[in-house]
Image (cartoon, one colour):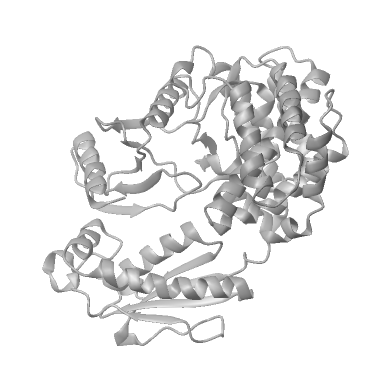
Length: 477
């Protein structure tokens, strides 16, 4: 997000609420190209969104308003820019279902507390699909109004070109294309007059005030009920145990029966097919972002997808012949290279610390010593000016000062290149810890800003765990 775009989002806030912005922070980027920030003051915080794809925004905004007024728990839209590229929406916090699952699982295993949250989601899913889908404007869908033949072939070819070929899995192209045609024709015979969320997975469910909320449904379209259920229950890194998955599947069916008659055996038969195409779509995305765009953290999901695929193939009895596709899928599950590809580079923790030189350079608690230490004291100091003395590098006014009235950009770019060199080597060699510290006079402005920005960058671009520490925070004025 450049300075001009940032200022436009700030202006949206000020015009909407007639209040000034006091805090601004960029949020870690997800799998999309959209950018998000959190901005606010003592009265409120909201999420600002930037996306240059107007058609995608139109779909999201239209669906948001429709679902919100149908009583579905989605973020409220406050205001939208005239060019439809920027908008403000309700701040639902930072706790996704996946984050809750990951933390709770470490302490309790896949416990009843996790299952209870999933049941809240599955209680809401039929309502989204049936009540939410009633009278929704499918004409704004992007890129297709329905999960139709074209959509399915896009997903299947996405898998072929961005996963199979880049992973160097051999196949007979014509035979595979023939199987794709057979497979998609079978899926199209399922009942499909429902709202298909498209990316219904644990990272797109927010937990707030003991309720579940839903985000990132801009890819929604008309489709079959089974697809979103498959997306949630076979969500790769969520790694739901099979016994729990079956329990949740039955729970969903019981909830669905509250809205419509259900032919259970027919539903189950189609479900396996939609699980398969969803896994293939996800693997295409992992391949595109991981193999093609070289964003290594997407590769971490591959072993989980292979595990789900292997389990599915054991009991896959679809009423269509797909010999080449099944051979390819079995080859994938036997690939030791793919099984290991996401495991070797996921255990690097980078500790980023801001500090004051008056109190000395921080020690590395990992016991390894060393690491990078960057001296920010040559950068123009906002702490010398009265209006910034009680603020920190996390505050918007200080950020603007450093970006517009100092050489912080050049300094950070140089620091980033040095750290990246270490990160790449540490990942290759399987090292577990790297220390990076930024120091300034008081440990409140320049060093804090630098630490925040590097943390954001590394989280968005590398498969690492970042621990961010502002050592002097208790003593900020």
